[in-house]
Amino acid sequence: MRMKDAIPATKEYLGEQGVPLSTTFTMKDGSGLDAGNVLTIDDLTRLLDDVNVDPKRAEFLDMLAQPGVSSTLRTRFAGLEGKLFAKTGTYYEDGGGVKSLAGIVVLGGGKSLVFAVVGNGTGDPKAALDRIEKAVVAHVDAAR
Image (cartoon, rainbow, N blue to C red; front, side, top):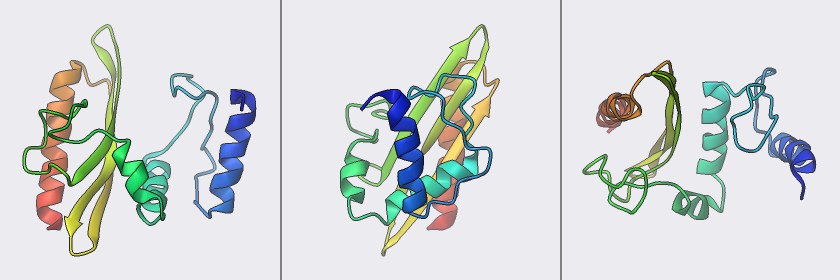
């Protein structure tokens, strides 16, 4: 499928699945780098909520970065190996940029935590991910 066809097909599918997206949700490309792309944190967490109850959830989680596994989170989130599944995002240019992390943490007992953190103008990407990691761990600890 060509991108010009994939974007409307994706929106149609999400609508059929009952995923409530904001009126500002806009997809212009598949990479996420087009300035016309608009996705709110609520949109992102709603998508993850939908994935979290989908019958193919395990397949989706296997595609995401995980602590302790060869990925962008390999050396991060000690103690959450096999429990945290997330997608990192980085756009860095001349001291500014965007750093993000969104995913699902399996808490046990049938409970999980869906999260999304996006920082604009974050500066150094490693330092930004350090701050994001600290915030996510604090929320996971509070949710347990």
